[in-house]
Length: 222
Ligand SMILES: Nc1ncnc2c1ncn2[C@@H]1O[C@H](COP(=O)(O)OP(=O)(O)OP(=O)(O)O)[C@@H](O)[C@H]1O
Ligand SMILES: Nc1ccn([C@@H]2O[C@H](COP(=O)(O)O)[C@@H](O)[C@H]2O)c(=O)n1
Image 1 (tube, protein in one colour):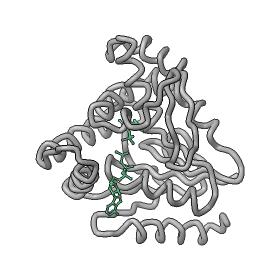
Image 2 (image 1 turned 45 degrees about the horizontal axis):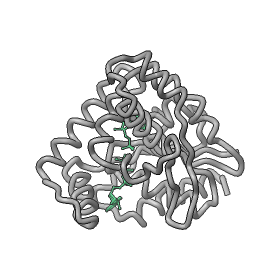
Image 3 (image 1 turned 30 degrees about the horizontal axis):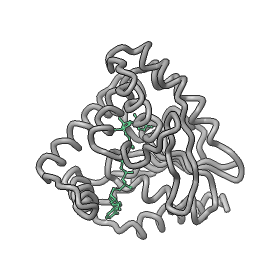
């Protein structure tokens, strides 16, 4: 059973690339950010203060969540309610990065993430997949891009959905999230020592996927 980890900052293209690779290889997919987003949302809905670490960790440990594959992708169902779109908002992203800074929350989600590793293989998307969750992964990629390019991508993504967005606000938000994710004491966002760094600032999605597939062939995983 092989594992490929793709870590990196928000908007670098991890989710897009991981989904394509998982489909192409017919492997399992772990969107670890979704677990932190769901934890943030569940804590807020249960009126749990985000700085109450034991209480938020309990929310994380007891998440009543299912991932239901369908024609339009994977539906996320929290306590019987579909929250697929809700968890993708910038607001929930911010809740996620707050709860993700709590060590007890990360501990509570660790085994749930490792349980996604099943034959024939797993593509794991996150911030600490190669450093903490799957340190023995066969291939580790750190996918990055400039903050301006990542904000532009997010801006296009939101305006295509008809959602009003401000580019300067998105740049600021992305920088704040990078700072929070990189400076936290536990599992900070950083490339694993043995990661291959891919800067996608001027690469297309296809070019990034081709580079990762070249690593897959080089490692003879398929
Ligand atoms: N190389 C690329 N060139 C242009 N656009 C891209 C590229 N990679 C991804 N995108 C677009 O950028 C947006 C963000 O990509 P994606 O959601 O995959 O990033 P992410 O790293 O998973 O972000 P997050 O961690 O916040 O979920 C999407 O609209 C996607 O289509
Ligand atoms: N392995 C991970 C994944 C995510 N986070 C935190 O969750 C936030 C949301 O993640 P997305 O990938 O869905 O944008 C992210 O900003 C991180 O704070 C994490 O800590 N570890």
